[in-house]
Length: 225
Image (cartoon, rainbow, N blue to C red):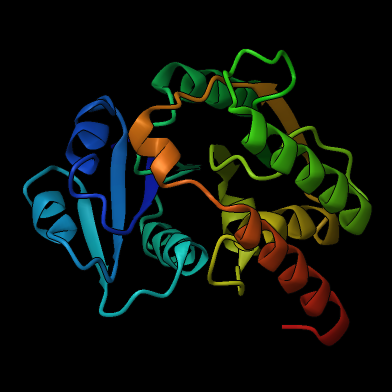
């Protein structure tokens, strides 16, 4: 039985998700959460080897990721949990490197970074937004990371069981960083390369959404979940 499972939240990804799943080697299991898509994302996932979980309505990427974590944790054979985007941005070779780090070092979560060796051709505006997000997240969390909104991560079972994400949308990336600090999880960043296509760029976050994320994080710290 595989000891590693890929967790893929998907919303209106019917044109990309099948190729993403097919590119994941058979040695890994795959769980996809269709987050209330309006297209036929669920149907195309159902035609692959991935395990499909469905949200009846769109709840947001954070909620879909937590559903995937909860579903995968039911299988006691899984020791490692990979969060993986549905738009084709992430590379399997980077996942392998992250799993190697997880297995060889005493860490709970390995985080992918676009900025440790700067190999990703990050669009200029996105780079500026991400750099501001890193500065904001490091200030509010007390951690010192180089990339706080990269969807590529590997968690061990302890980290997955402890995560308990409450922010339903893209703010979950900041919430994961907060959880690392609150739970004193051992972490490490390693460089990864993100593949930016016209399709993935069209699915990216806007400047306005980045502002909304900052508001959500501050509100959550002041008021609580």
